[in-house]
Image (tube, helix red, strand yellow):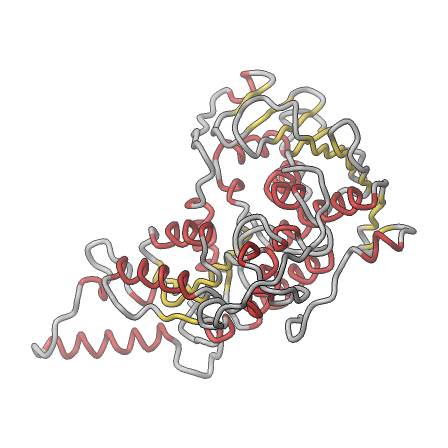
Length: 431
């Protein structure tokens, strides 16, 4: 699938040549050809498989990888992680899947990206690395499935989208709810006017605090082959090693200078609200700080985006609600919908899928890698939903209303807010 370096013999061309030669040899009884190489017995021939590498494969990344391994047109070739234990675990998983011993391991993701035989990468590092690794991957000619939050700030959101436009790579943010039937149906009702003229959409944040990157007491740093602390920090500001920063809800989840629950959960819920409004290429222009347990933002057309923690129908995690002049719909991770009128679903069967499986989202990505089309969670959609989350966090941090200029991509008359649009990155990780 890799389209780089057309002057060299492509992987598929090599395979076609190799298989052709093997067939010729087989005709004279020289060697047998396994059915898997010929695409028989349900196998996908090697020339049609998408070769995959994994970057930063921890708990969530392992789940994502297992979704990829379920697809018979994927061949996983290599893992990169700063932790030796994770590298070994993924190598074992892949080798057992394929009955082989040659899943490659890397500590530096740039070595994995240098391989010409890898078409796409799964990026499931901490959010500190997401955008930087994705932009490196795009410049290396790889398509990518990237976990969320995808960016640390507004400037990085814009740079990520521009990089994907310029390089023509397929980017899928890990906003897998876009490929779940009931969420998709709820968004369709709003987007197609079935609820009347839209006036309010509701998203659920995971807290309304703005977090700053902090330090923990210094501990002895492990050997680099066991845990590469410098590579783990990557573009983030240096801080001393502490084992508690390696896992869980640490500074990476904070999104950099300013972050918190709006970014962590909002990159799902706000993303769905944007999709419901047909607003993937825009964002609210006004953001108010929390008041009475909610944040109210407004789009240029007057529609309100409300982030609230309470007041939800019990439909599971990641709830969203869309209200129009003639109807409303609410959905959550239970797979169920609640509608203002049963007529809204008349004649339609919407599959209820409990939880938030990524299998459908992974399949959407793989299909788009083959067709070179845009997946549901593309870079443009991710850019603007993340801008909305970052701007809301800035309103929280400054505890005042901020107004955002969508043409200039800056806050109007607010130097403090504008300073929080970006942050310095450690060398050599500037993009």
